[in-house]
Length: 531
Image (tube, rainbow, N blue to C red; front, side, top):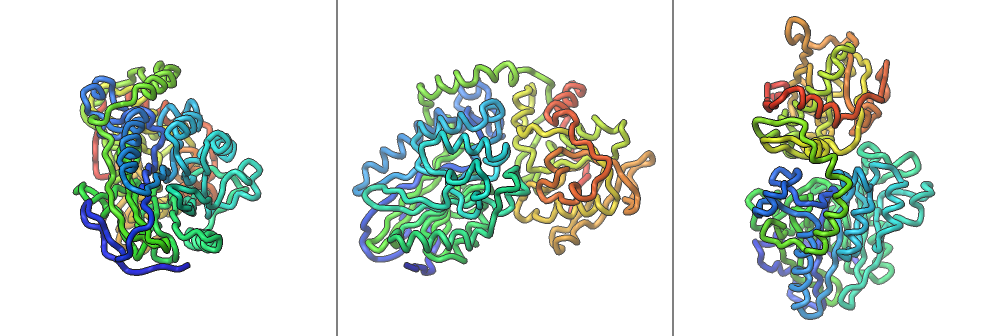
């Protein structure tokens, strides 16, 4: 059954009526995305929040608050007649705190089971530790894990465990759910050679057609593909009613002035929602369908999980128990900083940022005596800011959670420019490949065609900065993920020589650099500029 019409955006908190037919059923969709193992509350910088600040009501999120928020939302939904409640996740539960580093997916599985999730899609970070860890998670959770555009048939760990779609009954009605993950997950994570990824539009349409042939006409896509891709899927497919998004950490809202768009964003008949990241919000969407399964009315807004949301005592006790093995690591003070160090996603992935400078400077300082000239750090590897004052090892590990090591290698000047071209090739998408650097300055033009954006490159030398020599060989330091071709840096994998991927851990390098500084002073010095 194909149903598509052009409809207006929903106005703030008001019901958006898409047809004049009386509703036959109502569904409340509660959703999270990009939780990134933020088991405990976070600060306004999306980094760990102190117990003192949490007691003062200055923190956000954490599982103990999420439990309370979900219970309250379910109570609101129960007041509606003929209502079902669906709790889903848009991917990237893995990675982002010591809870993941220590427990891998076990804590996420336990907490999601306790909260009663109905389904989730696979995010790219679910592949960070390969198929084995994802398989253990899928074996433990009590709900389906979905991915329509990832072929796992040739991967023994995942074949039969990751579904393309599923059908769930709520409130006496059946809903088809389809999963979606980034098409470039092979570049972003470590799925292995046996897992391949395909175009999201064709994958979704194939599952929609299959579900409709089974008589399912209420269809929801759980998409870890980003707000832009979600709009493309909504435009280029038929039969999709709702897309619950993730990956781009987009806040959609009718009440927040910083929102990227309305909640929901309507593209034709399709309602698109997303609720930022890190458990800071719980998405709450109310949808009514007519008797033919076409959306009749839709309304909602993300709920901020701030200090006014009371933490659930039982969950708080369990989190404290899980945290005990981690406390000795994360409470170790390594340095201080005289001001906030900005590592925010929306800054570091499009321009020079303070955290990018810190990390790149630390990398270069560690290996400069080995003949290394240039440091390049993918901004996607930078996951948080650090507030002024004491800096703990826990803070550093929150910024750099991926357990990467330093990689050193040699590369021609021409290939360095090619690497920078890759780094700025998706700046419009706020992609994680954006290059934060040290030992080099570059200017790029974001309005130029991809592959022709780098305008100028200067390399530091004994007499200051000088134009890069395309024929010269330079010593480079990056992290092992990028050196092996991650985030599109195929030039490093294909063209590097004198490669050594087994240097010290990146988090230890940055911690040592901070410690040596005493009181670190964040800086911006114009090493990255636009024209």
